[in-house]
Structure formats: C-alpha cells, structure tokens
Image 1 (cartoon, helix red, strand yellow):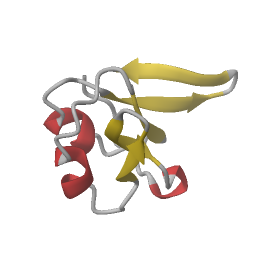
Image 2 (cartoon, helix red, strand yellow):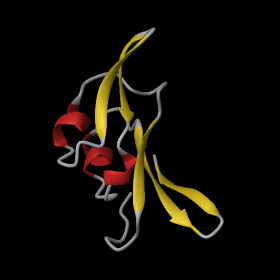
Image 3 (tube, one colour):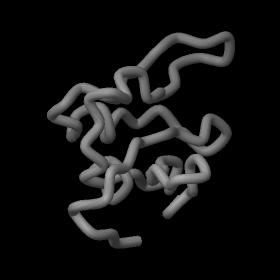
Image 4 (cartoon, one colour):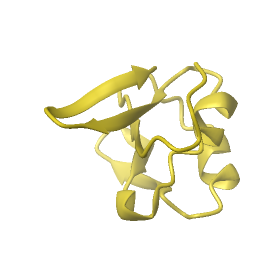
Length: 82
C-alpha cells in the first residue's frame, strides 16, 4: 500500500464501499474529496482530481478501504492500491 513520492497519482472512491464517515474529506488539505448528496444518501467523491498530489493520506485513513490511487502510466491508468 506504499508508493514512491515521485509517482503521480489521483485519488478515486469506490462508491459501493464508502460508508460516509467523512474522514477522507477532513484529512485532504487539497480539498480533492468532498461529500455529495446522492439518491442513496451522502457519499464521498473525488471531485477536484487536478489538485490531487497522490499523497495517500485519504487511502490510509479510510476505515473501509474505499479509496484508491490511480497512477498515470503510458498506456493509461493503473490501479495501485485499494
């Protein structure tokens, strides 16, 4: 679940795993994640991915392992951890 700091990553949220605790939103200093209202209630979502540094703080703090980091590769995105 650890990666090199120089790798460029972007956070994403697995909607079926998110339990709306909001810990990821609170820890993200770049305001990449936010809680939105959906038909099923609140849910965390990665909105401002251009701001994401791929630091992984949201991944570590998520109790449900609902957040992952996609790392940019030449052939597209490769999931690094979930």
